[in-house]
Length: 140
Image (cartoon, rainbow, N blue to C red; front, side, top):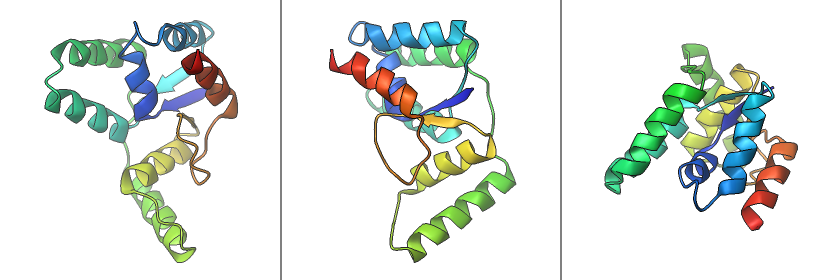
């Protein structure tokens, strides 16, 4: 299974001392052959936030983690078209969602991956098993 990690999950991985259970679960899952990707929007959100916060240690951890542990898949033109269609459909239904979440949803659909995050937005595909494991780890 391929899991796309949302920004909040990546934030937990960048604070291993505060979230050892999340980091341990992540390492075990990689060892079991699960694949992980960071959607381009999540990469953008993490990187600008760390630069803005002037957090060079976390930025270094993020860059090493990104280079070592993740498959890189860029968004294609068809992914952007999918995002436009999702946004249009949701607005017609009266369900506005931010552009970053729309892009992440389109990315997950196009790459047949499940979004692993802590936010429970019912309009974005989320893997409930990953959420359960991560919520349990975070609540300890």
